[in-house]
Length: 377
Image 1 (tube, rainbow, N blue to C red):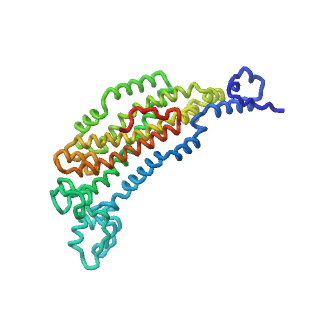
Image 2: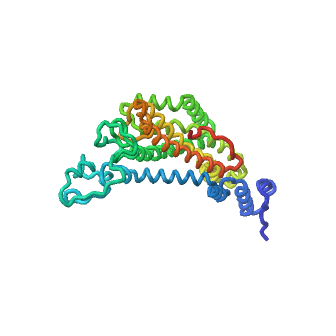
Image 3: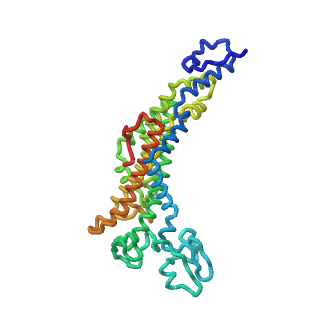
């Protein structure tokens, strides 16, 4: 009769006791040890259940979902072109997105004044774009003005349109930059912790060099050196410099996982180093990366707003909450230039931090109430 393996993981790795037993028995024993020692892999459902019960996390996720919808459908809320129109015998759907050649240089106001018989249009909620001045020219209009619910800036640009399209800049480019820095940090930290030696030394020296320079100073230097800096340029600079904190965190988790019994079991079964890293080490070291991703998005959004706030003019044609608030420096009484973009920025940062805190507590309840390093605010 085949001997069943022991269920106690404290003895399954004592290979001196396993001599003479069938290989299938030893393999199953090592499998039992690996299952017993993999905390993050076996508690995924528990973590998801904790997230579902956290009211603050649900609130933060709801606010982020609303901001994401605003960012995706920004052209439906504020645009200088209609949603659907019939212009000179042809029907156009979302001309602000598809940019038809026949409507080049036209906006809602010009189309109304030059409409032919039978032409019609369905205008968006606010018929103004984020970068083109309204019909009032250089007027600085207060909130609740006709056609401008949030007012305008000194150049006549509609503030509601700038806030709505600024959500696309903050969330879209912030998410992209965070994904890049998370990917770089995870790969660099995993290789440094798993390979050790020269690789670990090179990654450690790179981390120390980049950490010595404040990110905001480095971003401003890059903006001064690049001939035509854009918001995307700055965010890519942030992504290529902010991976250091995550790399150190992942390296520590990998070194901790390498000393666990399930890694020893995998190596005893003859698993290749690549399989040990990808199948056994990384799933149990990726938890901190998920937490850092949420906090990283908040950090990128805040840094992007700070850089755009410090510049006297817009870096490119993309709307930015920071650039909108920066205009208030030369317009002393224009309180709406600070309030509306500031509220959008605060709501985004607070929601991202609430979700990040909830993810951290769900993955490791022992960290509940402990502050995080390098948070979004």
